[in-house]
Image (cartoon, rainbow, N blue to C red):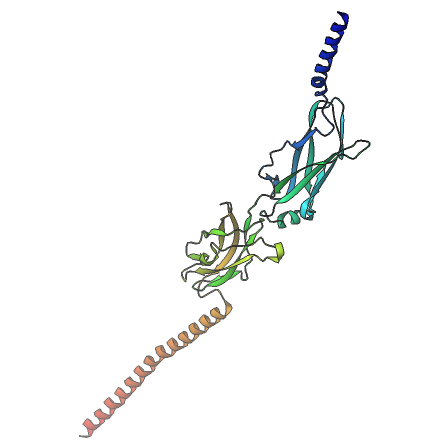
Length: 322
């Protein structure tokens, strides 16, 4: 009876062993993946004014073992992207039967390189985790993701006047510069001028600069776009300094940006020294002509009276003789 009981206990123990041993997984059953949402790609946090990236990616390691798991971590970027720096723990330990997360800090230091990178070109990052174990080497595990630098639009107008003044009744041509300080193609969907305090001043000719693609200025030596426009005061415009604001609307983000300049208007007939000289010369000639014409009638009247007196005297003498 005792032998039968011992046999039954042995069978039960053998039956329990597989189930119990299943609680101890093999060495390669730990899991490694992204905790951050990286599908289908991940948009990096970008400060478009400073062209600076500061972001964090998070990955997890799940360790179902009864002993701690030690891993070596490495991070690399494909295509030799050198302007992004990754800070992370190169050696990590995951406690037994736990799921833990770890961070990779992504930063940049060269804003020009960030801006020069096209938003259409994805940046691939690969993270490798390799178990630190004695004995036979253990195959590493890898995760990867595609990173995006977001599009940032910044269309800036700029005017540097060639002349500081213009005569009323004439016009001058100046240049508006459109600088695309973003990182992707942009255009001016609308360009308009607002003249303050000078209703007789026209500033126009911006149509040719609208809806024209502008590449990022300074990237690959791309120049700003140039738009020629006219400043034309009416001939009735008085002498004064006028303020002009040019407003440009970005096609990329719909934002308006402006630039302001001042232009002096010189009243017609008194704006330039040559005109003043011409006018003064004409007035002097006119005055001389007037004096000459006013003196002639007086001299003629005296002559007539003298002649009439002589005629009367001669006629009287003739009558007396007769």
